[in-house]
Structure formats: structure tokens, C-alpha cells
Image (cartoon, rainbow, N blue to C red; front, side, top):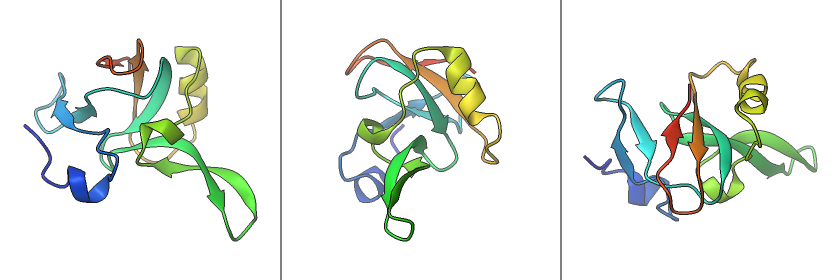
Length: 106
């Protein structure tokens, strides 16, 4: 099942969705930009990443739609620690490599 909003919400279309294992309403990306663990905010269909903030003139952690801008962690533990204080529900996804289907870790 595809989310009909993909092409509008994500111009790079890297978040074509497939049904998750835990819940028919849960969707995860079909593939990620590179190897590593990422924090996936499944309700917003976004990743934990870095973006430039014009207001503060610095790079800040934000929800990003493109997996290229996601933060890739070397270990599951690093991803969990980074998502520990975030309010939005999330999962940790592990990508074995570019274009490979991610594995839900938590």
C-alpha cells in the first residue's frame, strides 16, 4: 500500500512506504540513503536529521523528510540515546546499505 501523499510531501520520493510488521497503519521507508541506524518518526513520516536554521544561523536537529539529511548512527544504542528525550513516537530503523530495505529495531 502506498501513501498517496508521498510525491507531494517528499519531492525526492525516498519514503515510498510499505506496511510495517506491528501495525497495518504503520509505514516505514522502502530504503534509506546509506548504512546505519536512523530515528524514524512514523506518524510524521520524517527522520531525525540536521537542517540549517535561518533564525539562529546554525545547524540544528530537526525532523527531515529526506533520508539524505537524516542522522545515521553507528550503533542502535546511539540512536536510542538521541531519541530518548523526543516527544514524538519513533522507531529505530537499521539500513544495511543504500537502497536496501531497512530493519525495524525498536
